[in-house]
Image 1 (cartoon, rainbow, N blue to C red):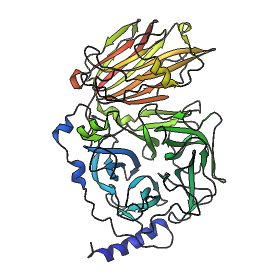
Image 2 (cartoon, rainbow, N blue to C red):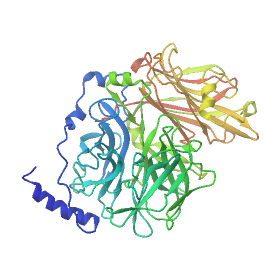
Image 3 (cartoon, rainbow, N blue to C red):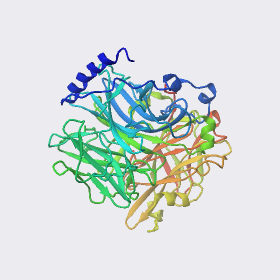
Image 4 (tube, one colour):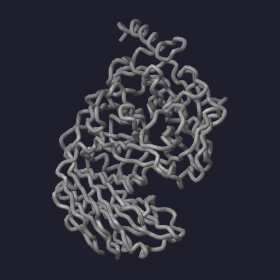
Length: 579
């Protein structure tokens, strides 16, 4: 390193000055050699590949721990996913930014670690962050580091070679950290993390928000900068909410008020704004929809769009620390989210890995303007094979319809129901405001009038094990309420797993609409989309009998009233090439 330091420093000196368009500054020549290399990420053994719980088409590294998706982007036609990774073991710790690239968001190639501890500003950890494109098209990454005093501070890294579409090498400014807690700003040094994608404001200054809290008030702390290097804390946060606790992994972006296309983070008309935060207390990802005052730098949620755990969620299952990016190649906004395991830590250590990423989802504002719609990227359908289509069929009470010809442990299933006799719907108790609690009390085995009806997935031959994804219909005053549940209570004979049942209300009118469900089944993952993506539930399950070829798929109706399957299509899914 010593022989090339002077010439490399000189090149980077001018490189950063041109990129950032301000006075020049020195830059560290490169990262120190890190003791974990690409070989560590790629190496694995045959037993881990053949484990029944490893996924076939969800993103995961070959071994060890993975959590938050970081800095997703598309650059020169290549999709990039960075993620929090422990190169040493299957539990959290020793975190670096691992890096993989793809041309289709389905098949992924691993690369060497992009960011890892090498400076005082990140020597005790390189935590989550986001990518921002500068005006000349160069990506810049702002990320949280842990300094020698174990304070959370914000750092900058940029690509060493902008002509490299794979962005293999990243360099950090020696000016790091660029944002840090001190006596003047009174920022909580242990709750100051996860910078968002930055944007240029109406005043020509860069803006970025960072998650924090003051006591129980969650904060989106706002910083501004003229040059992307010298950042000043604003006098007020972009938004805050009492009683919500720490806001991790905030995300702030526009959506079209009318239309499904995505839009970039810049000042424009005809948009609403989404502020998403990951609640550290509950490990849920919540969002509000509202308006952004570009002059005052204030975000205001719409009336009825609620902050905190009673508000809207991206996903009502195992889904956290999510991050979106604008896909300029296809004019869409794509959502990544991490799903942790529901198995015990000891089981994770035995299997040698923990954590997956959900299937990337396209998101847009629904026609009501009150919620986002999510749907799996269209590219995942390239893995579909051996289609099974069933004719229209009435499911009478107690019916269970087995679906043959599909690889039930690795499948994509779409089903739609038409419900008659709506006057037979049970009355919704006014106190039943928490859908998860309702689903827990009224699982798949509890017979109602209109429901439960839906799918039994990853089912064993004798139904000792199964995971049920289903609907129930209630009536409340002059309206009908559709409840979607994912019941894991019978998912495994292993008593050590977390078998929490999840639930969500779905904004569907069964008088005028059919009730649809799509489930992506992938060994230890059941990722479901109700009502065309209005409500989503991702669950992690670990059957002991219903694995690989021994897993089965069924449609069922355990309600006292008949329902009609109007559409049923299922596909076996090919294995993606991932890492």
